[in-house]
Image (tube, rainbow over all chains, first blue to last red; front, top):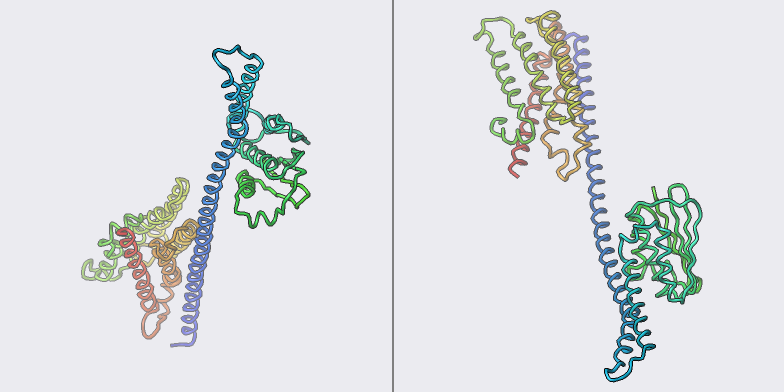
Length: 261
Length: 203
């Protein structure tokens, strides 16, 4: 075979081999890309499953907390008032003259009980909360709490107020409610400030109290209770963020930032 | 094998491979026995007719594998129509009926390479289940079509040159030396894909 023919055959074979090499390389790259993609999808699914599990756990915890809160409210406020009204009413005898002063006091206690129950229902019912904007809903909640007279709560607002999406408003309201309950139950605070700051597509709410404070980092890391974790999880559900800052003796500040657009 | 696994093939929208393979077989039988059957010296016209008949079937196969939108299918249809028109013009007017239509062969190979790359890329992007690419019969069909056509693009493209210059390896025509190996790889890949179809369907 002449040398030129040999060279042509070698060139043809070389071209075929190079083309096949690139073809196989392309297939290998596709396979590697697909492998990475499937791995990422699997990780995403696992993360989603963990998140769903946490969400379910948080929901159960929230439900449990709500039941506890309702039970405490009924026992401590309504229960006490109705007990007092029962005692007052039981002091009446058929044969005795009616003590109208005592009867009025009993009526007032029953009336206060009813008011307490209404306030409690308003605070729990999402439809009622969503009927207002977040500021008005918080104002009403603050009024309800300050009616006891043990604590001073101020609400301030900076920037132009906007309407937040319903689901986000409800979650944000529950966070603020949770923070206020924490201040009342655990912080022994005498004054609380709730500050709303509206800026470019975001609402920042800062709840600051002058209570006894706690080691926030340690509590978040080691506490078995899910109260603070619930606040963080709820903030995450809104697509926003939350930070809790506190030191023993220095009160606590919870800052929640939520997108309202 | 395709006939045995036809239910599996239909489940993966690969049923059109059956008429393609039947056409391949008929063409090869007629091409090998042309002297006895048609009393003709050359058999190129048989393969030229094969090019004309198989191209629409391949486009239907790629359309079903691409599984694109109506717009994608329309684009593919017009591309296929344009290719077919060129093949007909080449068959009748350019290279003719009795000469090997290398232009047609090259255009078909090129179209198959591009379309198989598209199918493979789409498959790699879309597929995110546990099976992976290697468990997908469509991957094997397209991978083999791609590799086969990379070889045939060169070998069929310079077929006349090979014949005219008598290019040989181990006393065998270069075409005869290379294409059977490429065909063996192609049909082995098809067979594996058919088995996968059947296995996955039975699962």
